Image (tube, rainbow, N blue to C red; front, side, top):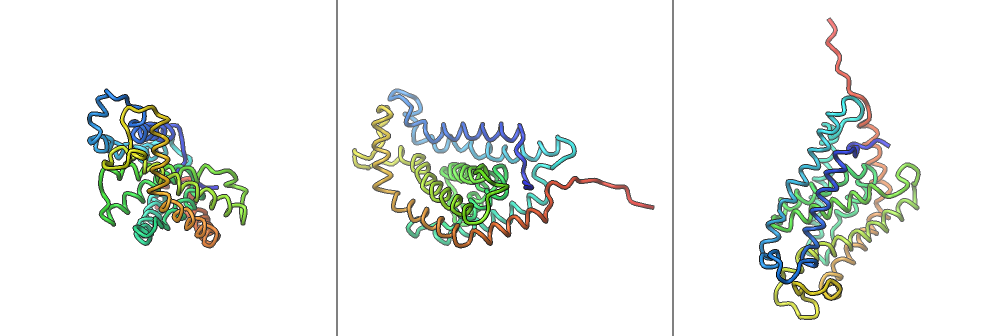
Length: 277
């Protein structure tokens, strides 16, 4: 299957780097000791971790330079890939406001999952992060949480591109696989984003509030209670809508994405010939 953004060594290294920093950014409050300087500057942490944004861009730059530096073969993020990325990111950004604020319904998830499935983990990561960035500009949702949203959605799309059977699994089994993954990723996305904001929310009841420096198991119990009482009512409808859309619209969307990929011929070699006299 043609993949518009192949994952090579530099791309994988950049993805691992940004993922490591992302995991650190999401989870450091749970591991920091009471006397840690980070705990004393916890309100500044979301802004400090805004360095995720240039790291996300570095992933795309690595993909571009890798294809060009390889010399011959399939290019990295070429003009056709950029065009397809722009169209799908715009579609994802346009879908997000349709459900935002209504019981957590976000129809963009199904498109991100299907696109990552067809176009691969490299394209999926770039698409997920760019779609969240574009939707934030569209809805005015720009803030210190945006790099975290970009990273989390990039992980969702990347995971879809890594699902098994991309070359052989078709029909109802594939739709069920994507629907199951979409439901799981929709809930995990909400959980991960809860972890990003939960340590900085004041005024919560002691049974669900973050306690800096407490043992990890105690804070995890409070975090689980926080998710169950505050966000599960948003995460489950998001997951249910993703399942419904994958099962009902999945076949035509997958067919359209695969047709576009075949016609774009991303693997076709590029050759420049001198003009004939």
